Length: 394
Ligand code: SF4
Ligand code: SF4
Image (tube, rainbow, N blue to C red; front, top):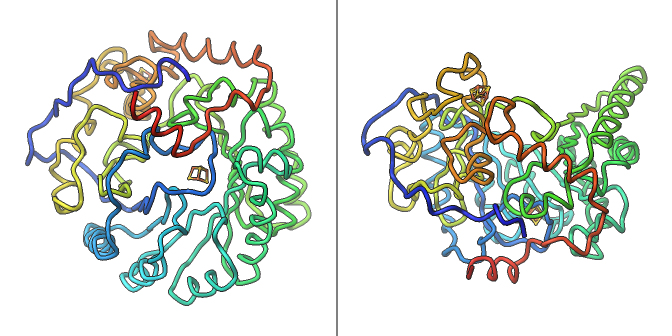
């Protein structure tokens, strides 16, 4: 386990703004409902919290429906059902149906494990608009090794075919890393064969379990450049053939010199609710030493507009140098606070991805180590309840 992956106690939970004070903000257009942390798979890059096994009971069906209704009143239009594996929830049809009636565009984000033709048809009837199926790799053995299931790959293939057969638009998501990125040509060919509408070739982002496994996952610069070149070749070739498939290539922060504008700005358009009801401005923010409110106790309107947690990084009065006087601060808002916290121990620092950060050397060191690491899947810390409980115990 990387030594700098644990939350640091140097910064107590001190809200920067008092409760009730509003700061300029947008509307939570995109609501992500993390229905459960339960999942039959164990991806070593999962973005769920390391200590997920230690959290309390899940929201009830009615509590979720209340959250969805409040979200619509605030202006939310897209609703993602995520997890863990959302199929584990026995009330998923009810949740889909309720959200559909409220007018959401709904998206099921799933590993495909636990899905079948009947459930898919019921979801369609209940009003589900979109399904995203994630794969671990295009090779069965690598996929199943990463997922921790001998049957996962065959099941995913079957379900991806069924998604199209039932007339859903389909996104296929491949998290790419040093163990699968050299097969990006095969990944794209598989997606073409499965008639995906969109393909996310999402280079692993290093949060949660991925941060613990960064040395085993981070590709080399040469791997990444080759993968991007191959993707561009396929884009040209497929467009020439009239294939409408869209290939989305996401570069890892670790090979950039400037951070991304995280979530389009903290508390501006995105709202996540965790299985136990914590409302977060991004799905990783639970790790930060900020007290976030719970939807079981506080209305979404109050949370979004006035809670200290959502106001914490709104605006720029929290910034330290070099961000404070930087002429790019309106583009990236100082980058990712979770990354700053994980790597430097202070969430107020500039994201170390930024070349102007005094901590940028940490990113350069990680890149250098990627050149030296030998692929060895035995060194993975897999995301499962056992490991999570060990981490939670400290
Ligand atoms: S990333 Fe893997 S382990 Fe995590 S929720 Fe998704 S399928 Fe489950
Ligand atoms: S110094 Fe801060 S605001 Fe400026 S580019 Fe870097 S992260 Fe962004």
